Length: 478
Ligand code: ADP
Ligand code: ZN
Ligand code: MG
Image (cartoon, rainbow, N blue to C red; front, side, top):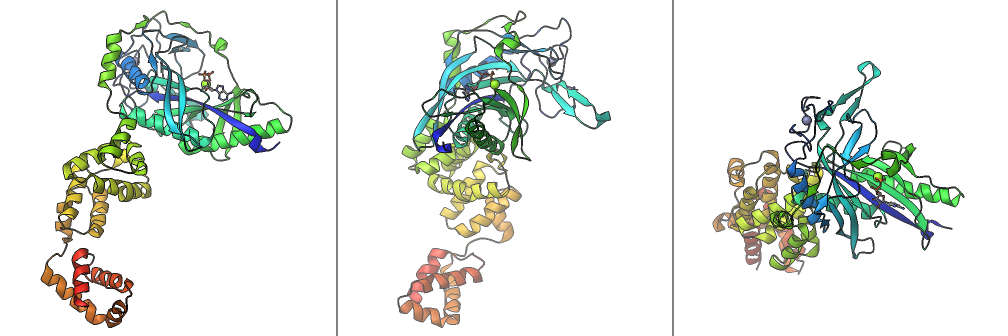
C-alpha cells in the first residue's frame, strides 16, 4: 500500500497558564522569571498540614475560555487528586479535574485542508496546577528545583481527535491561542511555556478503526509541532507497512535530529489513582454567575472578522490577517477610528508593519509605537504633508525610536514639496537633462513618464509630491 491509503489522526491537549495575579491554591505571585523559590509558601511547597483554597479568578477564567470555545459550562464540578511522583511536584499528586471538568463539548472553527470551514471539537477544559521546574545543570552534575511555577493555574484544553494533518494542527493551535489572548485569560507566551501542547498522533487505513496513538509532551513551538507530526506520520506508516505495531508511547521530540524518542510507555488513568480532592469543596456555579461571565466576554475574532467585511469593506484575506492577532486588530480599530481612514490603516498593517515584524522577528504585541502614531502617519499622507514613500521611512523610524511622526519628519526634514513653483522648477531641470524621454513619451511610450517622475523623486530624495509631478510633466511635454 502507499502513503495515500493512510490517514493521520491528531488530537491536542493544550496547557495554558492563566494570567491570574496569584496561584491557584495560595496567594503566592505568578510572575514569570523571579529568582528561584522566592514565590513560594507552605501550600505550594506542600508542607504537611498546609491546606489549599481555590482562587475564584481561576474558575472565572476557565469559564471564560469555555464560553469562548462554545463549551457547556458545568454547574457541578470538582477537583481531583492525580497521583504521581515527580521531583517537581512537591505533593506527589497534582490537583486536577477528572470526571467533572468545568467545561465540556465545545468546538472551534478552523480552515480545513480542503479549504472549507471545519469544526474541531473540544472534549473538555479543566483546571489544574502547574508543576515546578527542574533545572538540570552543572552544579555538581545535579539538578535543582525551582517551585515558583508550582501552583501556577493552568487550563487544559483537550481536543477530540478531529485534526488530520500538521497544518490543521497548526491552524487549530493558532486559532485557540488568539481566542485566549482576546479574552485575556492567558498571555500565551510560548517561549515562557505559558502555551504548550501535548501532541497525539496515530495513523490508520481509511475505513478502518483508528490506530494506536503516540504522545509528545510539552511542545512549545509551532514549527517543532509541525515537524513532529509529519515525522510521526511517516514513522508510523513505515512501522505498519513493515508488519509492525505502533505502541502507545510517550515520546520526546528532538529538534536537532528531527526525530522522536521513546520516553516511557504510556500510563493509563488507572495508574493515577484519581480520587476527589478532600481538602477542597465542590465547585457549584449558578446560572446567573455563568451569565455574568458571558456578558463580560469581549468581542471575539469571528465577529470582528464579519464586521470588517461589512463595515469597512475589507477583503476576506485582509480581515483574516487583522483578526489573527488581538494586537493587530486593536491597532487597526483604534488607528482607523482616529484617522477616519480604515482602508489605509489596514494596508499599512498588512503590508509594511507585517513586513517589519517579520524582518525583526517580532510579535504584534511588541509593536513599540501607539495607535495614534499610526493614525497620524496616515493623516499626514492624506493631507499631502508627506508622500507614501517617505511615510515608509517614518514608519521604520517609529519602530526604532517611537514618537509622533510629525516630530520625525520635522527633525529629518522630510516634509513633502507641494509648492507648484518649486515643483515646476524641478520638472524643467529633469526635462532638460532627458530629451530622449520626451521624444519617447511623444512617440507613445508611457513608460517614459514613469522614468521622468522617478528621476524627479530621486533628485528630491522622495520629497516631491508625486501627483503634482505627474501632472506637470504631462503639461510640459505637450
Ligand atoms: P491522556 O491524558 O491520557 O493523554 P486525554 O483523554 O486527556 O488522555 O487525551 C487524549 C488525547 O488524545 C485527546 O486530545 C484525543 O483527541 C487524542 N486521541 C485519542 N485517540 C486518538 C488517536 N487514535 N489518535 C490520535 N489522537 C487521539
Ligand atoms: Zn504558595
Ligand atoms: Mg495526554
